[in-house]
Length: 290
Image 1 (cartoon, one colour):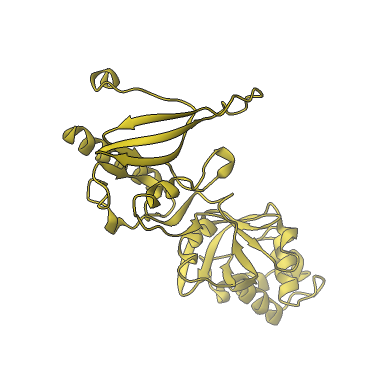
Image 2 (tube, helix red, strand yellow):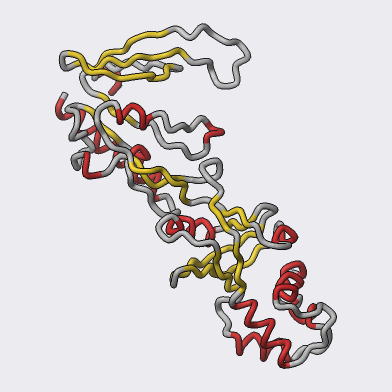
């Protein structure tokens, strides 16, 4: 009913190639697109759609497999907007570190420590590196403080003393002792990093050394996975170039919303919330002025 009330037309499978404003009217040059998954290739006809107002809600480059692109930034640039460099956030990390791939599938509740900051949550080891809640949260700040390494705390609720005293009460090989509290693959990985033989008999000195590596396991050779795996991004049109109603300060009646703007948030639904609320604010302003 609202669409009918405002005399709104819906155009499907139209790609906006360019937008120009002529005599106060936007002219959108569109190219016909095939339906996703269609084997029939249609002729790429070109058409023009005219409008008094435009809301750009093109999204960003995250997850290109589902059709996401960065083409919207070319449209905003054509109206004189600047675009800050795009960087993937809320993503996993690829890691080039000896034998880390042997931990593929291992999960642990822990902390990632980097640049005096802590990121708590699940740490998931994969065939390519590290993922999980803690890694995804860490990726949000990574772009500000790029580093080649991080430290894993695999027992964040225990101190080195707590862990070593607990282990020292158990008799047998140190690998069996660690396996009482950690995944066997993770226990073996920690001992190799600490240069402790898997067959070493348990004693106080060995327990302390193993506990220190559990609390401070340094992993180097890290890098974010990129837009193919990123949930969002930083960069885009600066917020200083729009009004509080998301109206462009460069072009009247042009609205810019969502991931086209430089407003990346942490995980937890904040980016979706911003996309929805920016669109609502723009639409309210749009209809109020129409």
